[in-house]
Image (spheres, one colour):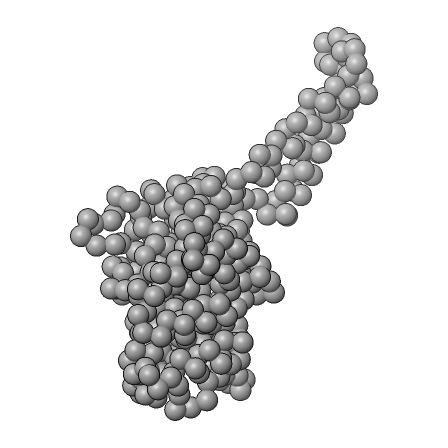
Length: 371
């Protein structure tokens, strides 16, 4: 639906290509700032409402084009008009369910136009037909104005720059992060504690970069051998994978994460506990060597069973409210992080994560060995 408005902006003879490009950049920044704050109710209430006088100030020449594109992205006029009868604000909504899909579609199309202008110049934006199809690959490739996935630790933030997951934010980038520390503390307090205690667990060195490149080449070669296309890289999904890997390695040092009996171990423990109960009951049935009678109430073994029963069920208890075990961390953390990525908040867009630990003996030399 936004394609006619985009073509009207780019084809307006009263605007230079650079001016049209500036309007696209403004609309993209407005939408990315809004999308980056979907999980923060206070910030969302601030950024979902746009004053038209501010829009006209930012876009002094032909602002109706930018306003039309924003309306196709989910903005609508508020019911309360200005004193002269004109609308004063436009607001994104009425809710996320109704406005998220059109907003993401507009951001994808603007990103395509900006990439075309960067590679071939502003005049090339309409040199070829605009592709209107939006797929999962397009959504996963969005970076939402360079916003980072994870908010940096406050103690590690220099006063001279904005510290983010991958370094200092570039000029003009959307400030903030999709995953805020307070949100993570509320959802997964143990993970927030791990991040606070091990801030360097997410750092990427030369060895890790070498292994990532080797794995990427191995996957590409394997898909090529079966006639499949090369996978497209998503920075957001790469950051999610990096955080999960770093947290799993850090959790291996914590006893509460490492205790996770397998189903076979739990079945064996239950069997051994049952055998212990039966052995205790058998001993009570036999007369003692000095000829003293068996205690009242234990002749049938019920007393021993009652005393032994709690020991058989005490180990697995108390693991429902907090994460316990590395597998639980792997399953829960990836899903929780992706809840903050706007593209994965759309109904029907889901991600499947696969985790495997590579032992050092399996990769003795990251720079020389094959994978």
